Image (cartoon, rainbow over all chains, first blue to last red; front, side):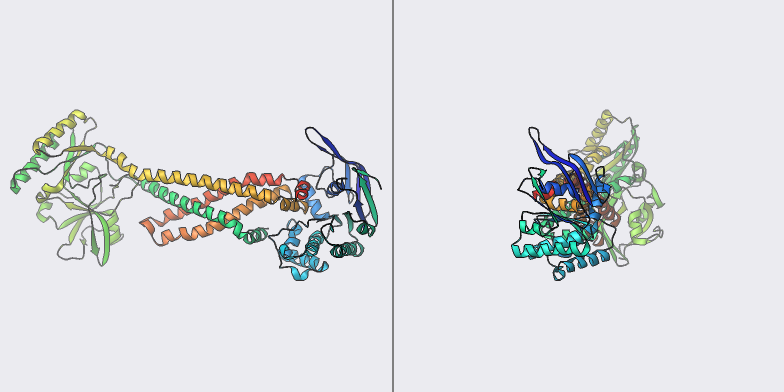
Length: 221
Length: 393
């Protein structure tokens, strides 16, 4: 489903050059739940951003769902992200000025859908994460766990084949973290969604199919 | 998408309210400036209605020692005959003090079939007026030598007043005024003339027949001169006047010079208003620019998120521009409500079309201003790299 070949990411300033990722080769199968672990600053999030086409590698090739994305234009990348990928972030990234339902509808705004369809799909997504009774609330009126569930609903509303989660339980206590993890496992199991999750939590990582470890930008496991 | 943006703006109405008020105030000021400018232009575009070039207005005081009416009449008639006999004089005639472009107005009012009309310019002129001023009749005739017999029973009105009183019907032959003792028969309708300068519209006007009894207080002689009339001639004319009216203040003014001075009464306020408006516009432009710039920096996370979930750079840019335009629209809706009261309530007695066009131009101006001010911040937002913006958050 996702193939990374010789991915290298270098950050350059006038005086310094930092190698964030070094020769990463990774194949992720369709329906796989992969976790990425490693110490802070080892390049986990950079790798996830490159997989999510939010960042471009300095070298190497990305193939997602049999499409080489290296030469995609900004518009093509946006459309590809919209249709194929869902994102979950540690800090939720919800828009506080919008109600829960509107936050979940967000990816659908960039598709050719009617308001009725958007509402229906968003309501279904919120039902899946158990928040159908909170659609009129604003994010600031929700707990951390509920916010992350809204973020999951937003990630799955467009029915993407791949979900990229950057420390989705990082800001939550263990009980809420487990709730979120259960939702992700259920999505992977029931709907066959491919999930790549960056985590610091060994316990959560063990629940996934495979674990990749990074150290200083290189894959060590 | 529009509904989505509107929701966002509505949910942030407190933060947006200052900007809305700022745009609203700008709209109202620009509407005022445009109304003033359009009205002035409309008036400017209308013909003056007479030829003021080479027309001089001589002011004098009645200082004749004799009280005998026949002697007074004789002096005035002789004076006018002497003036007209000068080779540089094309025509000349007596006129009341409110000649065109003078700071002297004499207004009156009348009631016609129960309808009261006020603010009517009340002129007194002799039979020479129409040729001296180079104006024309719309219908009927100007006064002539036969009129003194039936003086004060006849009157000439201008076209504007005739239409106000009688609509499209010919006013000639109709009686003016409801009072049977003072009503006068209209013998002519003169075309409108702009007596208050290029930028003021013609007003209602009555032209009364000057008679021998009114010599004492007429105060002005209008003289149409040939193009070669020079300062030497002016001196000669002055001398003639001074010899006739001993110890009188004699002043000779050229109407074209008076017009220039008179136009400044309209242009100076317009220029001052425009300068104030320009400062306000710059202020608003900086305000919009600043708010949008601040929004981008404050909303980098949101912009990054939108990019992540599928918004191309152009869509992000368009969103910010659209938000600014929606804010402007909200301001303009409120502004239009206030602006439309001006034609409805007939404020300042300007034509409704002036207000409506001023509103239209002010709306276009505000939209253009907001568009220009939001384009660059919108472009900057589109250039935000999603991974960086999301990481910063």
